[in-house]
Image (cartoon, rainbow, N blue to C red; front, side):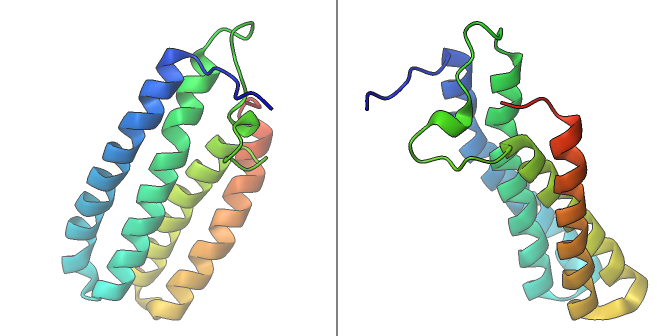
Length: 133
């Protein structure tokens, strides 16, 4: 099966999203580490935010391409068949909910649990709001 050609802006966004995700993850880790006081939890929040950023940027570039020229990201052989924008924003919401729960004083497990539930709910909401790829 021949690989489909993606719009140049989507290819560029995919390339830059890797750098942006790394920068976001490092920045979030450095910002969260001090108030939280738990390096492991700060790493989890930073990873979720970085991965969410990595998923959302190419999706955003893809939906900005005119529909006649658009190739869904899910058509790429290495991409899954889910809404990448909803997954990215769901992970970002999950990281914020986990951080908020931890800062309120409910601890590590409660923060991770609330973050996980918030991520699933966020994905369900965003999959209905965001345009399909």
